[in-house]
Structure formats: structure tokens, C-alpha cells
Length: 320
Image (cartoon, one colour):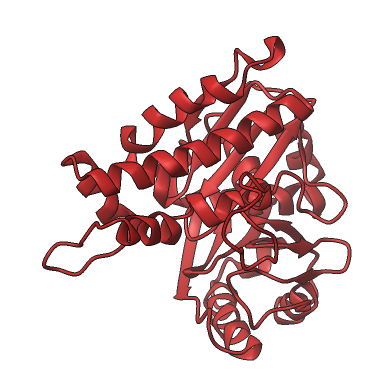
């Protein structure tokens, strides 16, 4: 019997992933559906329900003690609702209540997706051993979370560290969140591609206009592709430096699909960071790629469930 088995959901603008996870962070069963992000809220919930149905059908389900959800944000942890910027059909959607009903009344813990990757990286990844860290996911959107004083710090609503909606360009483009010049509006995958296309980059014969395709072009020396990644790196550096100045983090960990660009992103990012992190107490700030991979959201959601659910012993181990 798995005494501290939990279910985890990772909900983003591209996919809805689910898993059964043990107290060592091992994924024992998986399920996944594409996110119907442009559909109405009930259609999106239907995809969540389909993922949960696969998990509850597992013979391991009777051992599950809690459910953790890491969702694109903003989220409202206290109200149990979500309003993801990139899922317009969900505004104040009562996700916790709906998941609890489908999960047979189990405890449900909701955190933002950035907080989830932070929990995963602090537990098992590049932020291990760091008492003060910013962990980010740079993908369809840009999210983040904080470790302060050795503990993941979700904040009252579960959105603390949501760096994607810090404005770094006061006269910049309007962001879907309603502000202007947000980090996400410049550094997310779709916006890297949008900028490159507007500056003259053209995709190859396969028509791939993803950030990964822009990264390939940048490695080959395409000037518009290089410039778009440098612009994204500058926006990330400005947001990271502002966060470090405010709360004195000593490492920024970056994961998500855009981080897979490797040196195309990290070289200009580290260079730009030197221009923004100038005060003496942030000059030792380092940047590292995330190491928990594509499972970070699931592992982090599981960590939240282990902390808040019935596994008191697991919670002790995670905070040790």
C-alpha cells in the first residue's frame, strides 16, 4: 500500500496532465488531454474530468489521500477558483469544488503553475539547497514562484512570484491581463515567434512558427530570430533582477519549453542580467535551467498535496 499516494493535475494553455504520485515524487500512472483553451469553460472542464476519470479508474486510486492542482493563473487559492489568462472560458471558475466532487470528496490543494514548478525544483531540482530562489516556467505563458527562508511561498491566493505579469516596458504592447509591457508579452514562446515574424523571420518549408523553430533559426544565425530571443532575454533579466532586488533571491531557475532553446536564451539572459542586477546584494545572483523537466508541474502539484493532505510524515520530509 502507498500510504502517501496523491493525485496531481498540471493545467496549462496547451495540455492538461494528471498523475498518481508517491511521497518520493515518483509518477506511477499518467493521463493527459489537450487543453481546449479557446472553448467554453465547461468544455475545458470536460478535459479535466477525462484526465481524472483515467486516474480514478486505477486500482491504486483507493490509496490516494489528496489532490494537488497546479494551474495557469491567476488562481485564487482561498476561493478555490482559477482565471487563467490563456484560457478565457475560465474566469473565477470553481475548479477546486469541481475536482473535489469528481475525486470523491478528497482534500484538494490549488496552487499556480509557477508555484508548482518552484515546489518541484526546490524538492528535487536545481533549487535544492537554496533558501531563497525564484523558479520560472517560460512556455505558452510565463509564470513563477518563490522560495523564501527555505520554504515555498505561494502567498495568500497562490500567485506569489507570478513574474510573467511584471511590466518591464511601460509603453509596451497591451497584454491579455490588461497591463502593458509584461514579461509574458515579450518572453513567452508565442510572443518570441510573433516578434521574429514581424521583424522578417520566415519559417522553413514545414511552416513551423513555434519558438522552437525560432531558436533553430537563431542558432543558424538568422538576425530576426536572434533579436527576438535577445529581446525576450532582456525582459526576463529585468523581471528577475527586480525580484532579486525586492526579496534577495540568490538563484533564478528557468524551465518550460522556451528554456529548451539553451544557449540561445541563456547566453543573452546572463549578459543582460549583469546590466540589471547591479546592486551589491544581487550581483551574485545566478541563473540555471530547471532540471525536473516536463514533469515539474505534476511533481510540484503532488508536493502541495502531500503538504496539505493526510500525509503528515511526507510533509515533514518535504520541509526538512
